[in-house]
Length: 270
Image 1 (cartoon, rainbow, N blue to C red):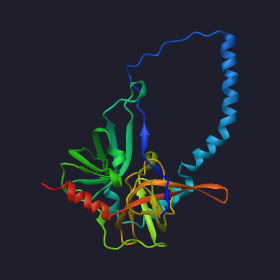
Image 2: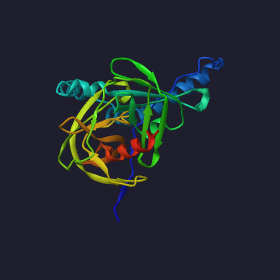
Image 3: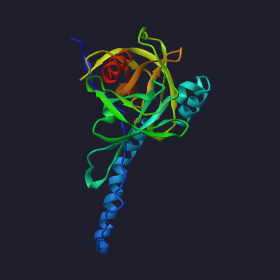
């Protein structure tokens, strides 16, 4: 039986504080404050090192950002114009009365505004906004999901928008060079390049997924995966954490684009 791997979804949540919340002052004695300070210092000393190590592993390095700029110079500008930021306001408030936004990436496949992203990005949405690289932001008219493949489609009411091309006819082969472009952690269109390692099965997914040797960060959910011809061949939905030579490494996981065509066919019927 084929092993199914655990994975992490690459959704990015941004908590927005409730401006009406009242903060009440609390009085403490000097000794209680001193004890509390010592406790905090000891606690921070115990956890700072491992937390910093994890933080560094999940934040793009300056070298990666420089590589991204060079890589984007080789990419068709029209493709970049079709990769968008998605912000989702949930129906339910979080703990403490805050309305934390979910953030992800998407890409436009129709000049009238048909955006592809992940289902876990739009799940539970009260409203969705889509921002294009030129700074123009549009409210979503409607959205639908295919949770079994973690895919979603968002419809806008616009025209003459930049689009990307899809290639469902030829699956990438292990060793092929692929490029992922997304908007993780509020970075604008971070481009990373790597090779397809293989196809793997992950839990809760009914088909094999692309397993790509590229760094993936929170907010990469819904990022398009391009082949060397500038065609989208897959959609990022998560990352796979592996320990190699004693070091933690994250690989990208992506859904084959053929599943997107099924979603579009089912969702956009009149």
